[in-house]
Length: 267
Image (cartoon, rainbow, N blue to C red; front, side):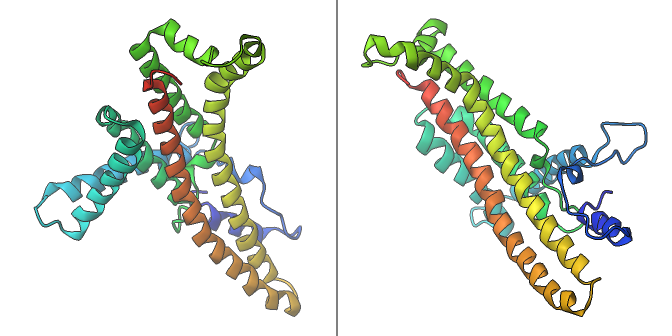
């Protein structure tokens, strides 16, 4: 059960009922420790990602030199990307105090997404919606806290509910929409976008890889078609890697944009 796709292929091969297409049930993995409902593969992967990220950046910075090694250069490049492109360029002069959160958020999501194409793991942690929900909740509370602390509760809420320059009768329609956008739509779309992309991408990989494995067990005509299914699965793996990186970037970028909006005098 730990090996995800590999174990799923074993179950498929043992089935006598023909092709059993993958579905949402393939994302509900049983505990690997009997009787412990928290000892599941997604939770294990979360802890593994924290360990991998910590070890990677510790080793890349342990022997920092003026002329960086390749390992140091890789670590510094990731940090500089988040610091400059997602922090400074989006948030502005107050960006440095938010860089640790943005950097942690980006690397954590990226590693857990990439787990979906790593052999013998092959499960993107963010395809379990509870994890994106928690990350979106952190972003939600941070950007509202920042806005309230900078502007005061009433000024902050007033800026959301009553947009300057809008005719007063329009507030009847606009105010509820703005409140819903800031307090419901933003956290929901932030989390569901990440979840849906990881869920759908992993499901597509299952369909083509398991479909190709099933075709190999059929008649000669189906055996000839199976390489095309595997080829599409391989192509989708490269495409999925691009999506995994993009989703980590989008989640972090939107977080930075929300924080920048909360820091602005008018938003």
